[in-house]
Image 1 (cartoon, rainbow over the protein chains, first blue to last red):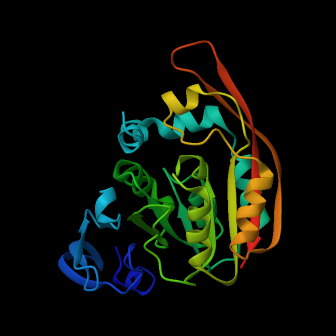
Image 2 (image 1 turned 45 degrees about the horizontal axis):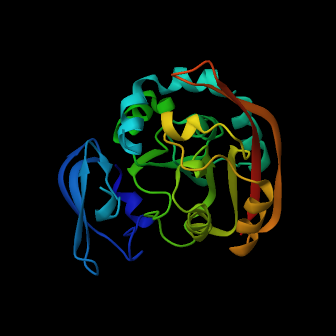
Image 3 (image 1 turned 30 degrees about the vertical axis):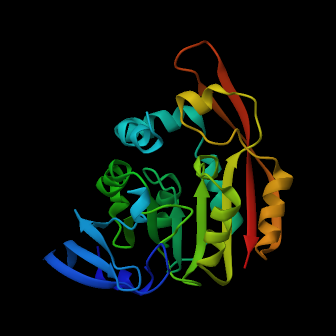
Length: 59
Length: 207
């Protein structure tokens, strides 16, 4: 996942902005990390370079 | 089996299955109706293994591919179509994780009959479009093949075109067109000799 994606992604529940935290990166791609929505106080994981932005009740 | 479990399980075989169900001409019709331009940004909702996305990437469009099934997205990324402009994300059609007015096109092929609330999904798809952006939905006409809801986890037995037109109008889409692709879906039953033969419609609206 490229960090520029943050410009169009949002929290699926409140549609507010997400805070990106990178755990590992390879060749400019984020492989592992989290998105955090401060309004909903929910973390969304990024694994295998793919963010999981399903609302918590649908995971 | 639950819906996501079904799609996770069939992901490695989906491209072969899809080829027998409906033709690439559905994709050609969707792209031509949208008049896609290079360097624009599209979201492909319920992307599966990238039936529509493959065509978009071929036209130089950047794609955010969204699906509830990680195994489907893995297959898509493995194919990747040689694209730097392909991004993947696990997400729901009814709760899209995309900002308001962010994208030029939204495509949803054979996705609507799997959602709980089709009108809500159309509202979400419209929300993320830029002003002047285009929504293209290709899906099944209303049908009577109940085995699809049992064997393929379909939630809706297709749609009446007039309902789709109403949902598009209700969210303020303009230049609405709901018509025939001229293509049909042919889906055999796993447990009987029955085979569904269903028309495929195309719906277009502009924000």
